[in-house]
Image 1 (cartoon, each protein chain N blue to C red):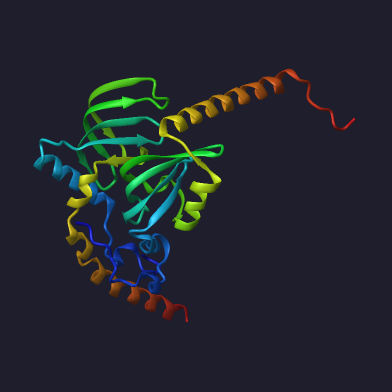
Image 2: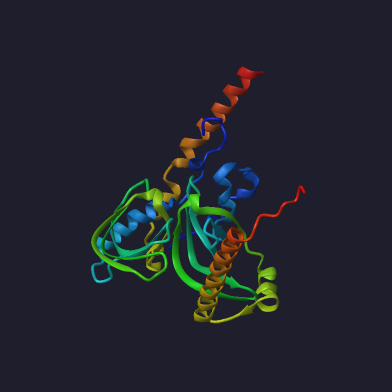
Length: 130
Length: 141
């Protein structure tokens, strides 16, 4: 990060955003078991559908969606839904997906990139103050 | 398959900010959300926003002295909804679930929760009506 601390990218992390993209890949490869998932929004509504796509902001688009109101008493069936990422509380995804997260994300080289930047930055700023 | 980062000694790194979550990887956590939900699960991954992937997630619903663990599967929680999280102390968890609380079925707890919610709404309505009809207390005279 800018103030010279070790940032998240310095450590090989497994990003949940990648889980979304993996879901998408699974959807294409395994048609017999389409990725059906549940999304609960901050306002309590739940959307059940097949994930079509997602992006780094967690915006997602779903197809064949069943929307349930907060109290669970009203239902809508919608052919397609786009949800802005900031409205999401959580997503429930099929358990098989965790096996399919590519391991190379762990050692993507983020560690190497981050090291020099982090230590160099801290040193430079400290000298200026001193 | 997912491989835990056992080779890294994260404790010695003194990580700041969200990176400190790395110490909690593959551990069983209790996460409290802004809407009051208590979710238990094994944290498999996280990112700079503290979005969390939880495996074998369970929602612990507690009503009075009864509780039930509602199985949820694989969960991705958006970081901004998290109030706090922490590692589950298995010994304390055992005491809680076996001595302090009584475990009931999922259907029973959901019904109890709905009932408690109804009671709470009734109470709120009642106190609102009461505050309107009763004359305000004159404490200065």
